[in-house]
Amino acid sequence: MRQAVAVRASSGWRAWLSRVMPVALIALALALAVIAPAHAADPDAAAAEAAGPATLRLLNRDIVTLRATVAGASPQRRVEQARERIRQLPDSAMDQPLQVLPFELGKLHGRQFLLGDANLFALYDTDLEPDGRRDLDALARQTRERLEEARRAWHETRDGPLLMRGLALTALACAVLALLVWGILVLGRRAVGWLESTRSRIAARSTGIDWREILARLLMGSITLLKWVLIALLAYVWLRLVLAAFVATQPLAIALDGWLYRKLVWIVSGAAEGLPGLATVIIVLLLTRALADVLAYVFGAVQQGRL
Image 1: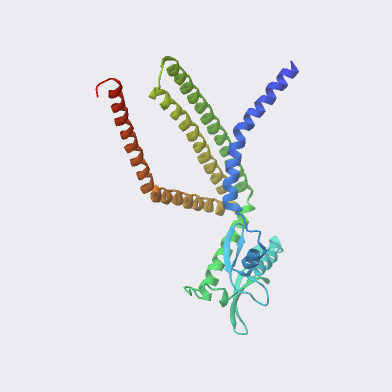
Image 2: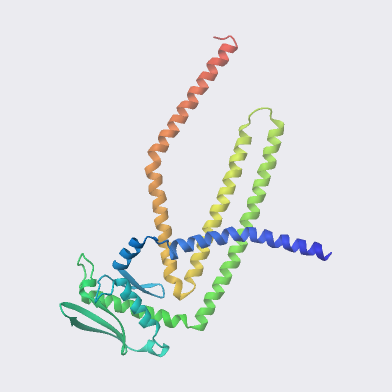
């Protein structure tokens, strides 16, 4: 008796995992596509990346992009130094006034960012974009606004009720996702089973090719495809809601929207570019089908002695 119960429990867990794992893998793939894009392992490419512009990010929020190499420190190294200084700040320093002080270093002009008396990082006129659309003061103002936004987000990450709300929304999203995925799998299985039994009855009664049997096969494949498309869409919505539920990951939710938009544009543009070729294929198929019908009619007439 105990062995039977254990076997049923084990089979139940396996069935549950078989349903949940594809959804989890889809969500993980979406997250990796946005959060952790692949980087080239080529040392030359890594060196070029270190020498190129580097963006300072705090709590997944872009603060400023550094472009200049100063005193032998590449932009990437300057970003790492700024992160380390900010990481070492005590919690009590987070409410200190944010100051932006102008300075000159030889021929370079810059702005020094301080939190109270703590040095954060410096901006130089060589950090400006090459197009020259903004001056150093405009870049400093934008950087200060983003730092203030990051400071507000830091305080919100330590708000207990806000964190509990995010956890509750995440739990609710997980429960709704599991229920909807279960419903899609059950309905899809029932629909495919009904079509399979219908196709079998049609095949048993028919001695030749029946278009209804072909249609049933096409519908079975379409339902399977639609099922996984819906599950992928649900996984995207779930991941979007979970990321948006927490202050630290809200920028990633916005980035996920941008990623989806770019993919949709890519698909639509690719489909639009492929329409002429698709139309040509359809025309060729229609002409081939018409020619085959004519030849079948002629050969049938010859066989029957009408020609």
